[in-house]
Length: 462
Image (tube, rainbow, N blue to C red):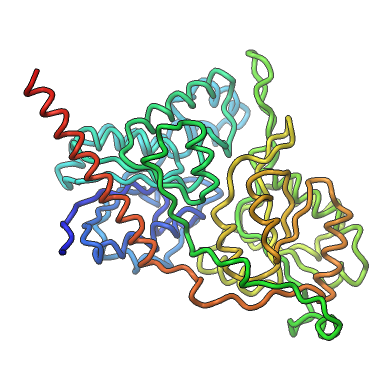
């Protein structure tokens, strides 16, 4: 049976030529939607107006999305321009501007709300699909869907208040943010999460989501039987397999500094927005405890934005020669770095108060698993540890277990641990990703039409 032709508006802040960790999902799936009988129009930012040190201009995939109808809006905002001019006012402006300036996409999202009538003259969508973060775009997408009378779908690349990656200015702000997210989720016709752990966390937080939640991973999931750890004597004798005699440990992503949030309302939940600050400190401490041979052979390559504090910590530890900060690079380049590395480094966002990891598994975990390489994970107990501890190629350690990390690094560099090559059929398939998202969009449209039919019948009978 031929599929019905649908029209969709995709709201994607992260879209070529803006290079960031959030853009590959859209780049892989949206251009393939025409095969699913879905006409896509992408609403995104004007890259020339974006000011941020964690985004960059990446022309790599511009040709890939050239055939898509693209509408670009200005991305600059008052709050962030004020912070650049008056850094000392950062916390003051942040406190007062919240929630009007929820995140880095707020100014852009406000333009979507303001111009929604004009936007809907260009495109009349059957469904509005929002890729988040930024989370401010979710409310903008809901406004557009309401105006058009279309279905509304949220695709979470990262969780919002269930496991926040950035702090709110105060407890009151956080309560408002939770209420705001619940209100938007209740109005969504479908919600997409990129890991089953995230879906479990959201369904536990808001049980009514269970029938509308779907998991769409960035990549296929390999079976744990695809990997093994060979500790035989003959394998140990082979040592490292790189010709340059350098053991490369790669980390792909952004490193954030610890933040502690306090306010006059009392000490709000203290946490590090990314436990990488502690994990990197643990890695530095472990490197100091490794053998001289290991320190001379290992190189930690970080592909992503690294705050000055992190670089200073490496210098103070006199480990400059062990680290290679390549900066923010296109996704194709970061994938190449991870593919060429001997092992991969992974960390977990965690609360500082109780030391418990968030109920969230980073999407890149599955990309790491597909590469079939040893994964060195430093994390508190939580969903990520539960997943990786059942996977032979993963080596998991607590946030303060520098001795264990050091021993693992010595073994890795000595060549005693090596996984089997990954299967080619477990690599990402853009068409499969597009098909799974398209199926969710179609189910959302059906659900919306059924609801509209019920509402019409009730009005007629009333």
